[in-house]
Length: 207
Image (cartoon, helix red, strand yellow):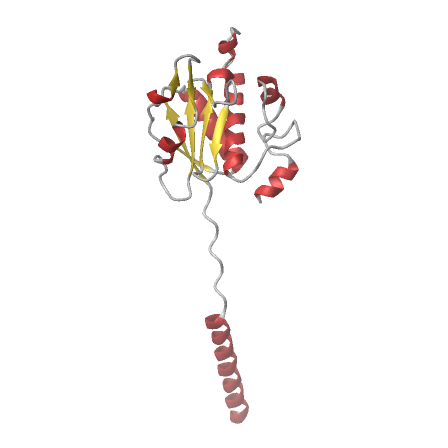
């Protein structure tokens, strides 16, 4: 009986030693990827209701943490007097300075009308290398076209353009699916037709 107990104790010790070796020698688990964070920066005055709507929508569509940065000034040197518009590219280096942490995406939101030299206007612009993007609310507002103000339409358009530009920062190009948020909006009706979400193909590319 005593010999049997002694043998059992030895077996238990060997088993514990083996388990200990397995744990010590185990490959450590990879750290979970940092959650996506978007710093939303108003460039000049922007309606608070629009920023709130966009923030909630970005949390839903991208699963991102959204924080609002301090207002940035509209760069006066970007104004083109003959066009009565602001060139979009000079905003981006200023937005890069508003990054709060290394992995942040920075989204500028402005009420001024934007353009790039080869186009009459742009709804937005993205620089994936600097992980900064900018959208203009000017042509998203029904009042720009002499129409009756419609806050919900205005807010939904703003959210769509924000998701589109952030999609570029996440590595997506333009999508041929007219219902996908990554479809290129050549006119406002394109923006109104598509949803704020990604098509299945683009969603898979994000995973």
